[in-house]
Image 1 (cartoon, rainbow, N blue to C red):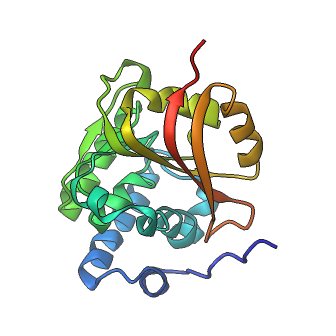
Image 2: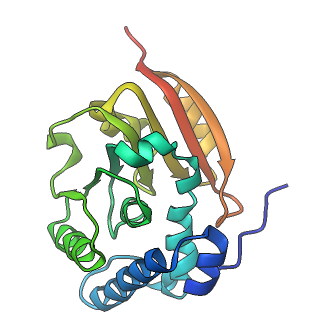
Length: 214
C-alpha cells in the first residue's frame, strides 16, 4: 500500500514537515515569491501546480535532504541535472547543501536561478549549457527531478560519476521498468524510498555505478 501524500499547504506546514529553521524558511519564502513573479514572464513550473507550490515542488525537493550523508552535505559537490526552476538543487542549497552545481540549458532559467541565489544569499554555480557539452568532474551526489528516463539520465550523469558517487532521482510510476532497462547498460546498487508527495512516486538511490563493458 502506498502512503498518502503529506498535506503541506504553505510555509508553516512545510516547516512543520521538514524542521527547517526560521532563517531557512524565510529564504525559501523569498525564493517562492520570486518564482511566482517570474512565472508571469517565463514558464518555470506548470501553471496547474502553482497552488501546490509548497508540496508539489518545495517538499518534493526537500525530501531528499535526509537521504544525503552529512559529509556530502558539508563538502559536495552535488550536481543537479535539468534544474529548471531550481527543483531540487536550489532548495537543497538553501537548506545547507554545499558546492551545488545547477545545470540547465535554458538561458532564461539560468538568469532566474542566479537571481534566486542572489536574493536568498545562496552560494552555488549555475551552468547554462547542454549537459552533453558541459565539462565533467567527479561529484559526490547527482540529483534530478522529472528530467529524463533513467537510461538517458545516467548517460547525462556519467561524466559526473566517480568513485563513491551516489545518485538520488525523483521518479514516477515507471521507475521499476526504467531500472530494468538501465541494468542492461550499468551495474548498480539500487534502493527505494517512498515519495512523501506522490503516492505513485519514489526516490531512487543508486550506488556502485559502473558502465557495463562490451
